[in-house]
Image (cartoon, rainbow over all chains, first blue to last red; front, side, top):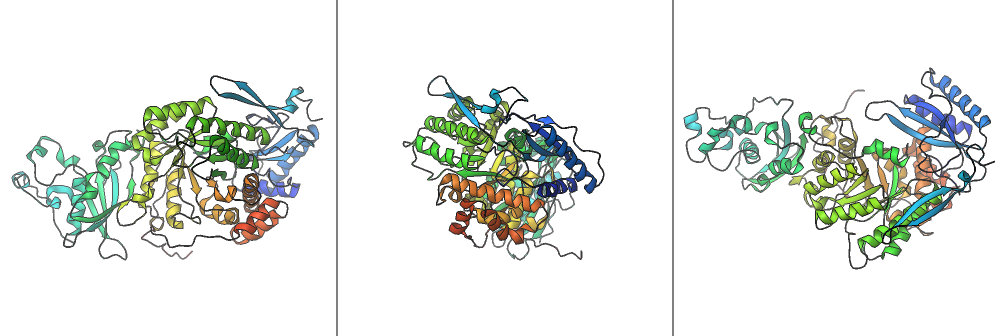
Length: 143
Length: 485
């Protein structure tokens, strides 16, 4: 399967040039960029691991894009088998949340999820999606 | 226009008998509205021979304290304050027989937090008043003091995105078709295929409740099987708007509770359940972490014709106050009524932190929103993947694009239809963010995306550039003012 979280998962994986164009769009809107990674792809796994803090203080679009790409490269080297995403935070009043979030690295094989069902009263069923990858300990998945 | 003024001597003012509304004090051309006043803007078509100012004063009177004759019991009250005041009347551009009237209402005329009370005054008796041939409520300025008595949307655009983990693009949905006749089992099949193919939401139609062909519990059970299967197949959060519209509040609460027990992220109601029922379900949704979807069933009976009724931008305003998270608000390019400028005004009303007055979009007033959550507009009805650039241009990013026929009618099946829509959308967002002129280059961008997506290629072949190009009936009365810049 292909995990389809994030803004561009239905397109072919983005090249670095394409990633940089998206970073430019975010920076020009004044959003703070950050790099996050995980080996738990569950749809309700909100908190991926942060690769450092969001890039609040890099000045100028070119500098910021360079700094974020450098962070991304470090993260890729440290976690070559993880999912990695870029997030853009907008601190504007009334939003104060993510403006975009897209996957920029994924494992070579994605085994997907098993759907567990438990019986409840009447015909109701309790559901839980279970990622096959998480059968192994964190840090030891997708290898 | 007449120059009628209020009769100020008490003995004259309260002499028994009939007196023109303007003389009774409902026309106050020198009145300056205060920040706490609620202001309504009406389009008035007086009967032949009825003076515009007297007609405006009559609307002010009949929507506040007046009756057809003088009553002495006014004198037991602070009646000067409770009288609504028509303070400005202007001819509608290009129409000899219609007038815009501005009417101010004191805040104390209205019960806090009650759309039912607000509307019973503003659109109560007055719309049937004989001296008027027609009357339309075009816009309202709601004072912040009154907005603060409403809770507003239980979830709002930002928190909905956070809960669903979906950012940076419009959401995608589809209404299950055919709208009537599917069994629960077959219905869930459509939901599963559409969601696993790439949609974020599927939707019950407005008239899917609990009929002989499908009991509501059956639909809920099969739909949630489909939602959970699709989540496991994609690793994404998915939802289906379970329509809980029913004959009584007790029945609606029962359906809502069952949807919650089954783990649905969203429930749906129809506008025809009424303002009080909507506010009750909004409070329930707020208590139960539920996104509340509103289908505007019935609205065109009173919003579409410009001469008489209530503009949808006013309904949108009331629904943001009443507290819904989604509302159908027009597509521009689809099969249902929707002039681009009018739709832009409605979307601004739903989504802005502070909606600016803009006459060429039909917005007569600045409207600060006092922190009420934003409502996600829903564009549904006769739209398809080939229009993605136009949809993004007209409707922006915070919108649910719903392709019913444009998903389910795909020649290679429902999942293929869903994938076509999702790929078209993501390709268009990517191109927009890269700085391309996506509106002009839209067709090329779609063709390029179709090169790596066979379902999109088939969708473009099938629907190509199907459009619904008819003149709109509900259009703004003002054109943009040319500027030198």
